[in-house]
Length: 366
Image (cartoon, rainbow, N blue to C red):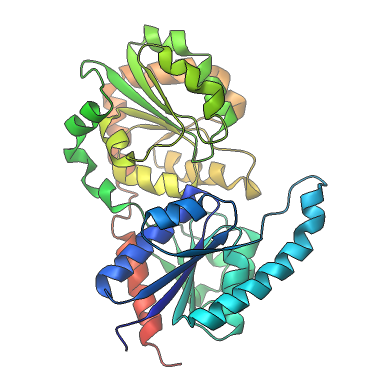
C-alpha cells in the first residue's frame, strides 16, 4: 500500500462530531506522516473554525438539517441537498481520496454518499446508542461501521459493525496527573470542591438556567463552579463572572485541565461527552437533552446510570437537583463507587481501534 494516502473526513456541527474526526486524523497522521487530509464541513458551522485550528484544511458545503417546524430553511433543504451532493462530488473528483470517513453532522451525509457512489472505501463512526437516519442510510453502502454501544445490529448490517468505542482527545488519557495544574490554570481554591458544568459547545438552556438560579445554593455548599455556558448563551451569562467562585466560559479550550480540576461534573449526554467522561472517571450527573433524535442522549446516559456509573437527572426532574447534588457531594463512598464504575465502561484505545479498521480498508483489494 502506498504511504502517501489521501484521506477525506467529514463531520461537524458540534464538538461531538468534530473532535472525534480530529482524533482519527491525528492517529492516521502518526502512522502515515506523508498522508494528505481534507475535511468537509457545513458552511458557517464551528468546524470551519476548529478544523483549521487543528492544522487541517477544510471545505464547506451549503447544507443544514431539517427543522421540526415549517420554516423557510426547510423549504430550501432540497436545493441545499442537491447543491451539497454536487459540490461533494467535485471535491472528491479533485482530491481523489483513498478512503472517506464520516463522523456525523450535516455535511457527512452528502460527502459519504458521493464517496460510496464513486466506489471509494468508506467508514462511518457512529457515536450514539441510537443512530440518526443519515447513518442508517449510509450504512447500506459503507464498508465498516465503528460503534460504541451494543445492539446496533437493529440498525446496521451486522457483518459491518465493529465495536471500537468513541475517539476522545488524547490529552484526556493523562488528566489524573494534572489536578494541580488544572487548579492553578483556573485559579481555584484547593480547599474547595470544584463543580464543572458542561452544556455542549453550543450550550444548553435548561442547564444554564439551573446554574443561574442556584448561585446561593452553591455558595452554601462551599463549592466553586467552572461553567461552560456555550456559544449561544455567553453574552447572557458572562456578567456572572463577577460572582465569587463562579467562572463563566463560552468555550473551554483546555478541557483536559477543566476535567482534571473538577470533583463533580454536570453534563449533557452527547455521545462524545459520555465517552470522554468514562475516561475522566469523575462523578457525573447527566442532564440529557430531550430535544434530539429518538431521545438518544437519555439512552446514552441511561446506559451509564444502569451500571451505577452516573446519575441520570431528566430535565423534567430538575426541581430535585439540590437534593441529588447535596447527597452526592456529601457521600464520598458513592463518589468513589461511581468513578470506578464509569471508568470500567471506557474505551481508551478507541481511536487506535478505529484507525486499525481504516488500515484494513486501505489494504483491502479494490
